[in-house]
Length: 309
Length: 301
Image 1 (cartoon, each protein chain N blue to C red):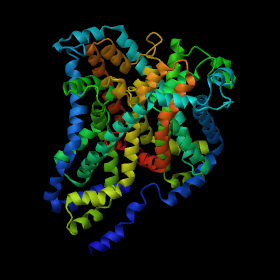
Image 2 (cartoon, helix red, strand yellow; image 1 turned 60 degrees about the vertical axis):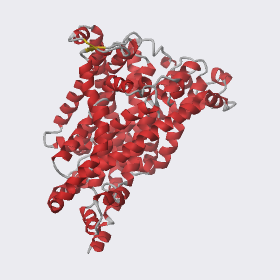
Image 3 (cartoon, one colour; image 1 turned 135 degrees about the vertical axis):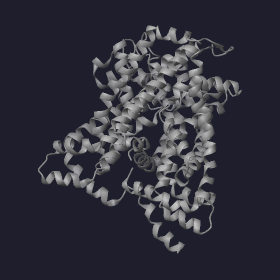
């Protein structure tokens, strides 16, 4: 939040006091949005917890299941495979995407025209749907008619979708391909808000470019890094479409992340109860991670950082 | 008095924070020094992005002889639009129209009701509005995937299963938190004096909202409309779970079926990928400045 906004927000209540009556009348304006949000986002959150204790095949009647779903899912090695993969993809994606988007963000924050043009092109992958990206990559990976032969790099002609490790690596690469541009944009905005005077002072003190990056740019981007990481980490729980179309969770279960595991259990195996258990786990992980990352930003900053999301 | 106030402060919103000319000039002199490593990395990443896109486009223009016979990255020897024709004849227009309906039917209500909520949150006060705002902020962390089973159940119970409306309702709900957040950040930047002078002129809150806040928030509205539109247009899970009939498929789902139908005809599959992206590309080209500057402001405040 810019400093001017904070001042204004702080000054506002005093002025409004005179018109208190009028102001409270505004509350009804939130009602339509609230109804949509409560019915289709908040209630399902409660619903999924209830369904995790129910027996339902997706079509017939819903019965009580007690703790059965929970004990069956928690004792299923498939859950731990999915959990491990979810965290693995999350961590490796963060390690791959953050440095790239940070550096590209710093780079594109410059004002030369060609950088602006590059930034336009960087945005293109975000326009494609995950389904389109997955389908396109399948064609690209064709050992005979895809990129490998076109680029004259035969080592790229692998059975990418048939070998577990390769499929996993591919998934991480394609995710980076699609989402690095978005985070680049966030960092670009962050860099543009760093006061120029800091760099001038550093230059007078004789600090080189690398020193400036580590002592000014990086610390100044702290909250941008947290915002981007939060979006990245929480978003990684939801890479469903891409993996569903690209690998379908295979080969074997080598790319079957939690969200996909939930879909396959619920809508393919018709086990909505166990699928709901997975969904609850997904929600808990998402909330815990989001809160943890906000904490990194310090307690006072929590509110404004959430707003920064 | 009121007219003075108005003409004074009307200039303020014309230069949103971070966009002043001064800031731009000063940045140029600084960042130019990072050129060499940054430039190298920038161009490498460009290649990583562009080569696949180039491959998709040229392959979609190839005949099957061209696809099987040529170097995959060579320009088509005999470019053809046959693949596009094939795709357009195979239900593409139905999928396209469904996507248009779902996108407009989600984005328009989202922006409208979120704008009203954002206006109330910024301009009103009291515990209720604080609570609502807090709830929307919390909503940012709810993953759509995790709620899909109860949504499926609810849509069945509402007798909406296998309809386009079934996709729109949850799409609106999940777009509200971020939309309210971005719009309220922008409305907060409107100087209080403007609202005061509207009130002195005898305008009701309702009039102030539509005649003052709405026009001044237009850049943000364009931003959130494009951003949400992109999301709904590309949405896959909700249509996959909530519809069934081929006649109700939206584009991403249609692509997925094309992939099965034309599995031996890769150029046709890629033509459908290109076609499905074209409308969003056109909108991006038209609204790019708006979208990028709006998102930058919305995400990195």
